[in-house]
Length: 254
Image (cartoon, rainbow, N blue to C red; front, side, top):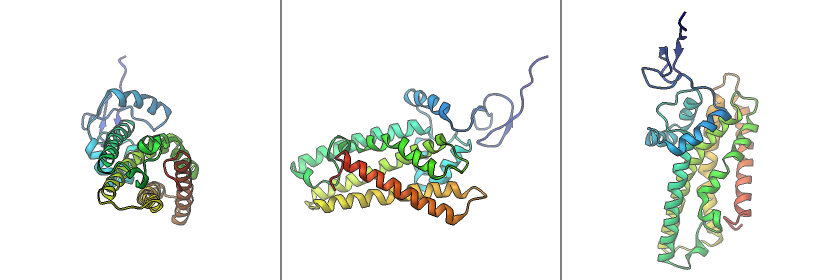
């Protein structure tokens, strides 16, 4: 007897079908929960392939980041750019633009580096790389904070990958401000470091708090005061670690 394929329900559009791909939206019928195997496949795929949805993903990350990440975790993945490819592209683009901003600053005022908000040391000049390297560490912190909830470590890793891409945009905007400060000869010295920490860390804490707060509040057994308490504790650990490592690697001088 020929083998009869079972009917599957598409995780993306909820269409019932038989086969390897949904005829309604094109998503694979083999999409599973995010785990280590997913990233082992995603990394080489991200290097050699470029999917659709880059600008749509970028838009969603700033208009409805929690909803977008929950959709991806729930299997609704067709409209969105793959996470590892997305963060690699954003890290590369932002690193190159920020490097250009630093060169432009040197042309405007060669001695301006003393007053720059950020840029000390190698990782200061390529802070996007620092953000990328921090993904496993921030993922571990968010997972440990909510380890009793339904998301595993690799699902936290995926969420942190998208957040890292957002942080690159914020970093780029801070460096544009840096350029304007130097161009208009505004001197901050130590206050400049405080200004950078404010401009970067406030949206940093907001992103982590809002996204993970949204994800955890979707669970029926979640209690608001418990989630808020965990978010506050998580953000304190994340901010303390980030600032300590930035100081240790000579990204900022406190």
